[in-house]
Amino acid sequence: MAAPPPLNQLTLIHGEERFLVDRSAQEWRERARPPQVDIEVFDAPGRLNELRLAVAEMPLFDPERALLLRDPPQLTGSAKRGGVDPPERLVAILGELAPTTVLCMVAHAKVPDRNAVLAAVKARGGSIVFHAAVKGRDLRLWVEREIAVRGLRLASGSVDHLVRVAGPDLGSIASELDKLVAFAAGKPLSITEVRTAVAGDEAAGLYETLGELLGPTPARGAESIDRLLSEGRAGQYLLAILAGQIRDLVLTQAYVQAHGSSAGLAAALGKPDWQADRLSRQARSVSPAIAAGWLSALHDVDRKLKTGEISETDGLRLAVLGAAAEMTAEREQQRRRN
Image 1 (tube, helix red, strand yellow):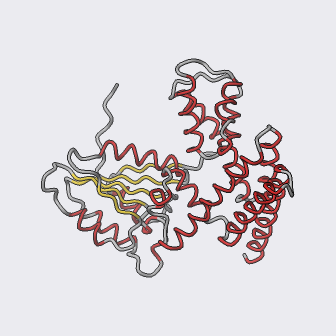
Image 2 (tube, helix red, strand yellow; image 1 turned 180 degrees about the vertical axis):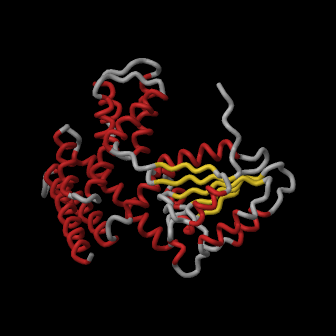
Image 3 (cartoon, helix red, strand yellow; image 1 turned 30 degrees about the vertical axis):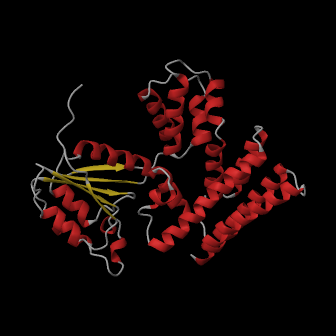
């Protein structure tokens, strides 16, 4: 196998597909990690004084130094708020980059074409990696490539099933594919085996339910829960999983409100980075009051199930229908305000 090309001193990774951005950032980290010390990470810094010192400082013991700058507001236009250094300040710092230091900047959003930092990276001959959102046919092609990379041999219909159950979240799909690798143990899998391994995870199906509730057509969330119930999933179990996902959503909103950003969210919740990133995105899609109301409604359904006041399927359907109605009303109010 040919050796990878030399690591560029300056790298910018950005895009709309967070899972792929994180994957590229991890690949950079694995290549750039100094022999004796870990990579120095700067999370969403508004002020850049500490970064400037690190950029210009020559390493004392190691031949090279690696720095990772994650989601700086200077890349996405949010530097316009008070107390945040402008993009031009970051451009000046790039000009002070010590020859023994490599720097990677990561943005979980598309950096505008006119951004001064983007222009500076291009002018310095830096590496730029962009990941567009993966949808439609591109999503299917991505899944097929990931299946091939893992050496999986899956029966016809497996891609459709993966996209329906785990998509469109690439992190969820990748997790399911890794599970299939262990399940297959080198053997081909029939569509029945794929459905048993993947569809047996109610949590993956409910990620679709919650995603639809928070999307532009919340009623599809009700359709999603109906489909899961029609497939024979236990309503009580689905209720518990959905309540857990909404609880994580409420905790995420509280964390972001207290800290001002989602930096450190994965560690605080004990979740993998891709899952924390999804929660952070979802938290911006619904008001905290509505999310807290959903959690309360599900707890009320659980109480009624235990007292025999309502059946598990009716209780879950009514709760999700109510959530969809609330989201639809909120979307309508937003359209009127805009």
